[in-house]
Structures are given as C-alpha cells and as structure tokens.
Image (tube, rainbow, N blue to C red):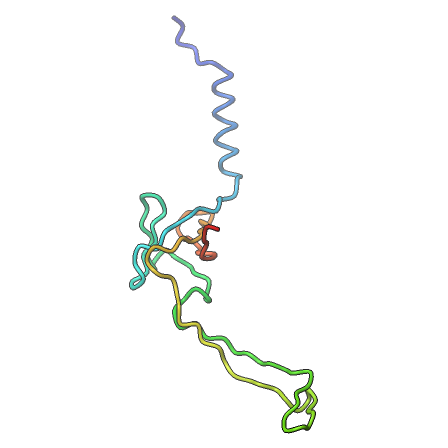
Length: 123
C-alpha cells in the first residue's frame, strides 16, 4: 500500500476549510433556562449576560415613548381636530423572557457573542 496522499481528498479538505471560513453564521434556536440571571441554552452551550446581546424589547420592564395623534374626536358634541388632540406618554412592557421560551439566536463571526434576535413560538 502506498503512503501517498490522495490529491482529491486534499483538495476537498481545502475547499471545506475555506468554505467554512466564508460562510456567515446561521440562526440557531435557544431556550431560556433562567430569567434572572438570564441564561439561555443553545444545545449543550450555556450563554449568560457576559456573552449575550439582546433586543431591548425582550427585556422585562422595557419602556418606549409613544405619541398618538387622532384625526378627529367628538366630545360633548364638539369635534376637535388632530392638531388639538395629541396623547403623549410611554408604554411599559412588563413581560420579558421567561424560562422555557424559545429564542432565535445568531452568533457573531468570532463566536464570542450571541445576539438574541427574537422570541419564537410554534403555531
């Protein structure tokens, strides 16, 4: 038996290695293991706040400013235009991620950080 390497196997390995380095990371599914502190499991990997980046609206007590303009409103028989009726305030979302929630996660190119994109559900 010859100790020569198969040139086709060598070429295939080079193509695989180079292809893997140029392919972007893919979206993975993770499951919230703990709410506080936030721990998300992706396969056997446990991710904590040290290596997680998360969409702000997924955080508990996320608050956003809102402004609502009405086209017109009738009050006590009088019609008011939108110029007169503007509701300003904020909206606070009190539900964040809960243990057991499934999330879509994307790894950064260097694999050091993981971005929680959204909560996902089955239909």
